[in-house]
Amino acid sequence: MFWRIRLLLGKEWVRKALKPARQLAERLTINGYREYCTGPPSGRALVSYVVSPLLPPPRFRDRVLFSNWGLAQEIPRALNELGYQVDIIHYGNAAWTPKKHYDLFVGHGGHNFCRIAEALGESTVRIYFSTGIYWREWNRREAQRFYELAVRRGYLLPADRAIIEGEEEATSRAHGIIVLGNAEAVRTYAKYPIVIGINSAAYPVLWSGVAKNNYGPGRRHFLFFSGRGNVHKGLDLLLEAFADSGLHLHICQHLEPAFARVYRQELKASNVHSYGYVPMRSATFYRLAAQCNWVISATCAEGQPGAVIECMAHGLIPILPDAANIDLGNWGVRLPHCDVPTIRSVIHEVAMMPEDECRHRARQVVAEISESYSVERFRSSFKRAVATIVAAVRVGER
Image: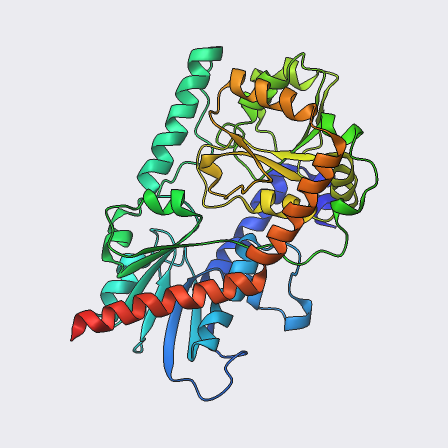
């Protein structure tokens, strides 16, 4: 329904119309959340993240999009299971002030973490929850990508995923940091004493790309399924690498107008197929997941890209740089460098991979997601990380 309204009224009108609703959502709070407490709570926690996914009754909550919607549901549940009742506010809420004591504060982003931490006092354990690498390194990598684009093409485009609200004071005031990502992501926070990396997750899927019978044609089809940030996610590099390759790039991402103008010729190529924003588990998504053997990204900075994990859950084999912070085992394909010659070499190499090898890797990918990226694994990892940080703080107080 939303997309029909948007087509009729136009993108800008809808954006303005929805602004009050977004502002209202940022002011909403949930007090005393204890849906998953098995007994009387032994402590009280405050979470500053996202509120709206928890507002509907449990049976009406989103069970498709993990990312921030799934995280927003699983973090309070994990804290309930640790014995905390939870108050929840939006991470952008700059007006809310705590009026009670909290044993634990889990905050995200630089918008309100420090103000709340100061109001809570020193007795509250403070955890910074990060969905990406260290913010200064994030911005440095993105700036490098835009510089390299300007050198190659002569165009200086505006930053598309830069972190505007600095996080330095927030990460410095936290007793510990929990970051989505592997050891590569954790290393970007090397100057901080307690940093724990955990995997993100994907909701269980009923249909699996591993069920398709013919992996031969799919070797030549690559899916780029991504959130916003054309340059940040490396679409510019992919378009240049796929030019005149004879291999097919399927793009599921919103294209910024300025970016589309710069790459208008590449986007018109017969082997490049652009679909705009495509929802997870929609008919178009399923069709492309069945058509493609590979999910590819040339991102410069992540926590862990949830869109890629979703594709992996459907049996697509990942082709990723280290910056994606996903361990690739012996089933994924590593991009050793995110430059056009390297990407072009890798895609031609994997396009020649035997069909049986593709089938075997796809099955391994699905098994890995089911084991290491399940919702249950995320919840247990988050609980373990919180308990580790709380224990370290309590030991330091003795």
